[in-house]
Structure formats: structure tokens, C-alpha cells
Amino acid sequence: MMPVTQLLLFIVIMVMISPAWGAKDYGLTPKEIAPGTYVLLGQNEHFNFRNGGNIVNTGFIVTEKGVIVIDTGPSRLYGEQLRTAIGKITDQPIVKVFNTHLHPDHILGNQAFEDIQIAALPSTIEGIREQGELFNDSMYRLAGAWMAGTRVVLPTQSVNPGVVDVGGHRLRLIEMDGHSHADLVILDQTTGVLFAADVVFHGRTPTTPHADVTRWMQALDTLSSLKFKLLVPGHGHVVSDSLPIVQTREYLEWLINRLSQAAETGQTMAEVLESDAPSSIAKLAVFREEFQRSVAHLFPDIEAKALGRGRVEQD
Amino acid sequence: MIKLMAPGMLFIFLYCLTPVAHTEEVSPDPLDSVMWKEMRRSLLGDAPVVFDDQVRVLLPGDAEDSMNVPVLVDATALGKVTRLLVFAELNPIHKVLEMEPRQSKPLIGFRIKVQQATPVRAAALTPDGQWHVGGHIVEAAGGGCTAPSLSSDNEDWASRMGEVSGRLWPGDQSTRLRMRIMHPMDTGLVSGIPAFFINRLELQDNAGDLLTRLFLYEPVSENPVITLDLPKLNVVKVQGEDNNGNPVQARILAGLSGDKK
Image (cartoon, rainbow over all chains, first blue to last red; front, side, top):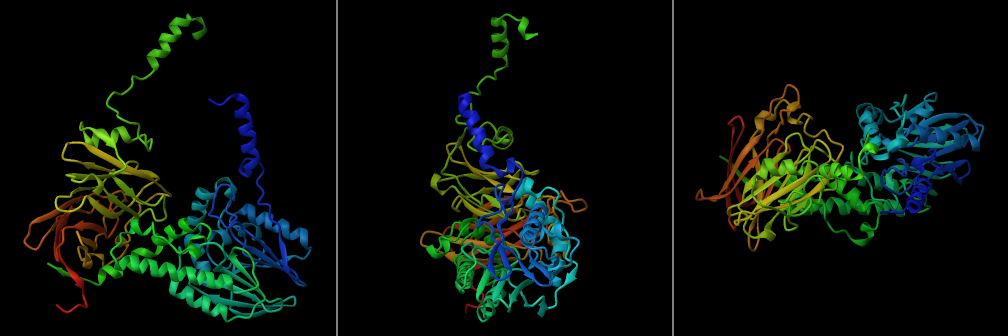
């Protein structure tokens, strides 16, 4: 039995270390990475009750004609705190919000920007319409009370890929796919900042719930041919080289080879979950969890193809 | 009221409330499940039961897809096993599958639907009449048993129903069989879709001798993918049926379909 004093101390410490017990604050601190260009870095973790879903990078660009926001975070609360953080940096109004793709950590903060045009690729809007509520439900399960009052707000405008000029920033809107059915990548040709969305992960295991891995690897090849000064990945630190592009590609290649090899050698799905990886891959944040999720997403199809190559006579 | 009682009375009163220790229980349930005693009573009966790590149940800690949770049960460490029973305690339908290993190793891989977080257990009966039980908890968002199968939404599922694909991988000591059978495996828990599932499968060698026998229940995932380790052989006959009497019949041969015979 714990003495009463120890128990009290334990409770005090738990309250201090657990933000979920106090007023919820994501502690968003925009970091200026280029003139007028800010990034808010999330944790390289899985969704949990401590991080409240803040595992994602969001960003904004302050131009002479207003602010452009790139992704809105995992919850209503995040969206609101992002908007407050922007207001502390500039008096410029927010003129446009982009959702790079359908995943919940990028779009569930939309609620805080309902009075502003929210733009996304058409398949992204369709995806959010179909699966947004499902995402919202599972985010409650994973991030708990941080999600309070969050509802799905659909983007209001379709993005046309191409170059647009906003307040002196020439933004190249690039449509890709592979991580999801539609991934919007934004290259600010004025500053050289590439917002690569979840096409690129840095130091964290890529996620595959809607992935077409072959298309994704092609998208990465296209990305490497772009000229940029700084790369903002969807998850992980900002860099000035293409290391995270190489890293993301290396992981995807390993993943697809591992799953194909497992299917061709007769491993059962539960055995595949235990696969070993080379250290350059196993060291990526949340490797085991994300790899196991990817087995669930990708293995059944690969396995069905492998079994379909067998010799069977239907009697 | 209690204040008025003599202290001795209070002691006796409290003592009477303390449950009597259950003498049969050899060790406490390592998964601490509220359903364990009921599962044991209804599925394992009066036979002696021991929790045993030699019954390995491999599954993910968190179900990414609650309609398809991969499971591998491996009781080969026990040696001879006469029955293998798999159940998911907090599923609306507990029994997942039953296996009489016979010539097969007491090992089986498959996927299941889970309705919520649940212990998934395997009980292996050894010839001395002892059940050995292993298991793990899988966390899940749930809904796997009350969601319609994908095929129930697909008009031509019936044209491929019962179709078998599969392969044999010959090893030094045994042959691994992996097969996939097209079937909706509907649980009957979705309004308007009755229970419809493959409930019996027998694997035989080319001469028709029984290798192993399986009884499947509703929680086995749609288009079941089953993994077994059989004796060394080049041909396996699959014979079975669903609960409506539709047959499953195929022969799986070693090699690939592109190979010359």
C-alpha cells in the first residue's frame, strides 16, 4: 500500500505532467523558416492522449495580401490555437486555407477556419466527405478529450493545379498521389520552400492507410526533380536537402519488398507483423506500430496475388 | 446502523461477504478477463485447464482493420494435440474455430472479425486430457462483426463463391499450405443478411486420407485465408461446406500455375 503522502505526491506529479488534466494547450510555436514562412512542428509519435493528435506539421505564409494556411491540424482546438498563433505574428487576415490531403491530422482543425475559403484537390474533398466522420470517431478514441467539439468541415473550393500569385508569392500547386488518392504539394517559388505534405516523412515511419505504394514512389521521383531551398515534410523536421525524400523512398521500397517476399515464401500475416528491418528503417519513429498497420493495409492484396499463382484444380 | 453492531458481529458480517476461494483455479487468468470463467465453463467443460505459454497466440496489439485481424495459433511446443479451440471472449459470437490437428502440426493462421477490444485465446487439448490455454488481448475500434461483408455489397460475389486459391511450400519436415476461399462469411448480426459461413473443412491427401479437420464459425474473416503445416506431400484435397450446404472442393498442387506439368 502507498502511504498517503506518496499517493498525494503521485497525483500532483501526474497532474503536472499530463496536459490532459489541465487546460488543454498544444503549445503551438510557429517557427520562421523563410521570409514570412512559418512552420509548426508536431511530435514524431502516434496519436495519443498526451499529444492530442499533434503529430503533424502545419504551416502558413504571410504575404502582403493576407495569410495562406497549409493544413489545419487534428482537432477544432488545434485549429483555434493555430489561428491565435497566427494572429500573434501578423495582423494580416487569413485569405486561404489549403488541405493537402484527406487525413484527419491535416484537416480536423478546419472548423476554426469556417469563415475562410478552404481549398483542396477534388478527390481530397470527396475522401473527406466519405470518411471524415469515421476519422473523427477514431481520433476521439486515440486522442481523447483534446478532440472535444470537433466536427468535420469540408473544403469549400477545388484546387486547380498550376502557379498562382498571392501577395508576391508565386505558389506552384502540384497534384500528386500515392500517399493518398490526392496529395497537394505546394512549392513557393518565391522563397524556395517546398511544402511536401505527407508525400515525404522525415525520421518517422510513413503511413499507408490509403497508399498506392508504386504511385507514391513515382511521386517521390517527381519531387526529387524539383528545385527547392527548404523542404517541409508532413511529419518530421524541416531540411535543406532531399534526405527525407530518399528516406521515404527507402522505407516504401523495403516495405513492399518485405511484404512480397513474405507472401512468396508462405508466411502467414501474423508472422509478417514480426518482420525484422535493417537498422536504418527500424530506427524510424513508431516503426513497429506503423509497419504493423501497413501490413493490415497492404498485405491482403499482395497475398491474394501470390496465392493466385498457385496450382489449384476446382473439383 | 453498522455503528450499533458489536465489533465482533461486524467482523463476522464482513467475513461472510468474502467470497470463498475457488479451489479448482490453478492460476489467475493472466489476461484478467471478466468472461474467462464463463468461457471455460461453456467451452472447456470440467476438464483440467492450465495457462501455458507453449500455446503461442500471435496477433497485433491493435487491430488496424477490425474485419481482418491476423492470428497465428501455434501449439507445436506441446507435442501431440488432439483438439485446438480458438475463441474471442468479448465478441458477440465467441467461438472462432476448432481444429482436430491429426496429421497436421497444431498450428493455424487465419484472420478474424472483432467487435471490440477482446482477449483472443487458444486452448489446446493434449492426450492426457489437459487443456493448455494461451492468448493475447487485441485492442480494436470495433464493429467488425456487425459490419456487412464487402461481398454482400458486390453483385457478382456468388459467381466466385467457394473458389479456392492456394499454394504448397514444401519444407524439410512438413509442407506449408496457404489457401484462400472466396466466401462472404456473414455473421448474421447485420440486419437483413443472415449468417452465411463456411463451417466445415477437411484436408486430405491424394489417397483421401484425412490430414486435418477444421470447424469454422462466424468470426472468421471474409474470404478466409488459412495457413497450415501439413506432412510432406505434393497434393492436398480440400473438402468442405458452408452452413447452407454449398460445397468447397479443390485440389492444391505443389508448384506454380505457370509451371510445366
